[in-house]
Image 1: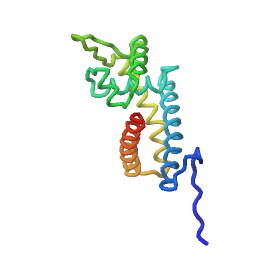
Image 2: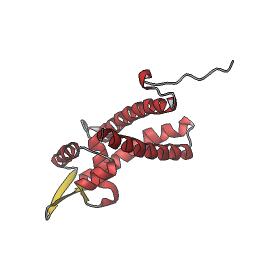
Image 3: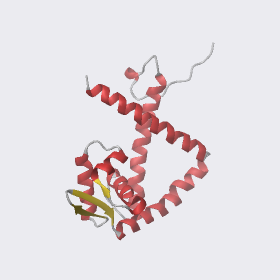
Length: 170
């Protein structure tokens, strides 16, 4: 008799007969999301900025990306942050800490990284190289596998966004 592998899920009552794999994927997302958030916070702490949240770390890196000024709506769109209040609060904290500056042009507010913010991102990169990239090399995972997983997660993001719109219309 063939043995079926055990499905590793967090909520057996949600497992669908049509796709038990989706429940496995969701559990993986929960675990990976929490691990990634913990990593960002600890990496940033090692880089010298204690007590930053994962949202603040993500926002600082995105605001620093390509050294361009960015509007709140664009930041939230790119990072898929639905609640702009969360992003606004985090950006205000980053401004207060001197890592981000805001400039009003007309009715729009633009955010950009300060020299201190860019320097902190550079230190974060150093810690990332020393800890995460070194661990990746030892893990046996290939860059190709990581790229395929990234594509899968972007596709899944669209799946969940579509399902969220459907649920909101019920």
